[in-house]
Image (cartoon, rainbow, N blue to C red; front, side, top):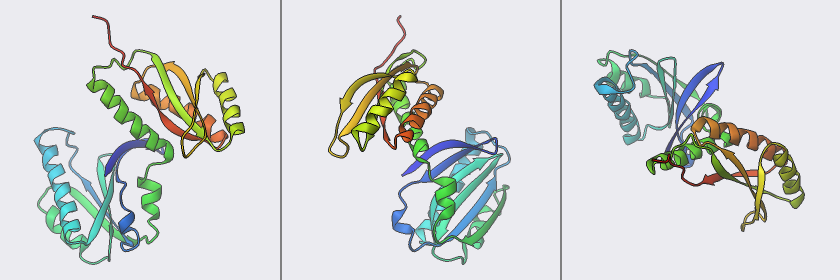
Length: 239
């Protein structure tokens, strides 16, 4: 399954697409193949962009169909689309892609290096724990929009947190109250007995949710806890 998110590196925004279900490939695909393509500053819409996406998928299908490599993700920064694959060996990868790209009119370059531990994937493509939470938030926000939610309206938002011990939970709740959250309820599950729901009133725009979750996440990690996500009710403008 592919997930999409963004992060800031050296003051530049990097948009990332990552394939997260790759466990079955890590032991037998030790070569990192990088293919960088610059599609002439085309807009992210229209026929030219659709043609670029078709070419991207054609390259992925060609490498995967022949079981030469596994596509693991893409990074987009400063006009370059960086495609990453892990391969069984280093042979024929560059020749195959060059044959597919030679008549495209795009600038491109590629390289193959040994990366048996998949270090590049872990550090530069795979989301951090907090980035995973932001991805899940984007999905919730999308569903709210589909239901006609007015995201800019502030409303009570419940955030769910769990801990290994009751003491950790109690210290977290005390700190959360000092940062504008309110205690809602104690919660428990089979995996974690010491859970809690806290509430804060805020809009559910992507920017605001990321800010609140980042603040809460810092408080949670101080007590070695686990952020479980958030929920809220629909808010709509009065007619």
